[in-house]
Amino acid sequence: MVSGDRKPALPHPLPGAVGLSHLSAYDWQAADGVCGGSPHLHLVCTEAYVVTGGRGAVQTLSPDGYRDIPLEPGSVAWFTPGTVHRMVQGGGLRVTVLMQNSGLPEAGDAVFTFPPEVLADPAAYAAAATLPSGAGPETEAAARRRRDLAVEGYLALREALVAGDDGPYREFQWAAARLVREKVPAWRELWRSGALATAERTGAQLDALTDGDPAYLGEATAYRAAPSRLGGYGMCGRRDEYALPRTTLPYEGE
Image (cartoon, rainbow, N blue to C red):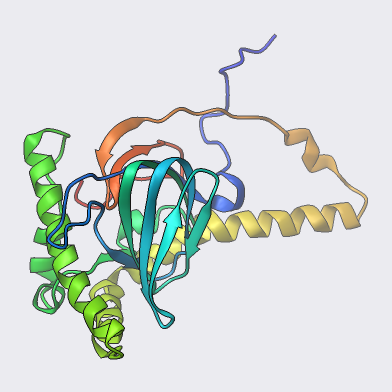
């Protein structure tokens, strides 16, 4: 008899090598009177919100313009690379986050909508984006300052986009790309060992089935996991994380 909790030390990643976390949206009021998280974009990852409780919205900036997408239990919203998104608290909002290319957002793929002068200075950006370790008052205060700075830049982008000027939004995308360029080789390795390896494993299994050799099924197993950190300060809210290989890593500097 095998224990129900026993599992290999290095499990396969989650289906599709997605990242997984849970978020409770911040209830801090911002300069525009809205409660919510820190606006940002991802350079190469599509992100999805699966709403499990409460009410709220996700505000997005993209070539489609400005959108305010309602969130309620059972709804799913997702946004592709380059889409600026801001989670808005409407009352008890809680979402399960599914993230393409797990590990990349935490390695710097996510870029905050800080004002242009901060984005232009890598050292200033790192100082504004990095939080102290732990979950005490100092970390909460730093997370709130970070959120407020991101909202400052976001509101300027939104105002211009609503007025029909997509120049500031486009420039933010370019600034974000310049900011992360040196990190791309490390991202490529994370992608190769995660999402790409998972897709290639499926190809090898299809080849085996074509050859009439399902021997790989002899490696079948199951896993379970519970959150390894509860209530951390994420980009959009308090974040529950999983310490699974290539699944959810702490954000850089946290």
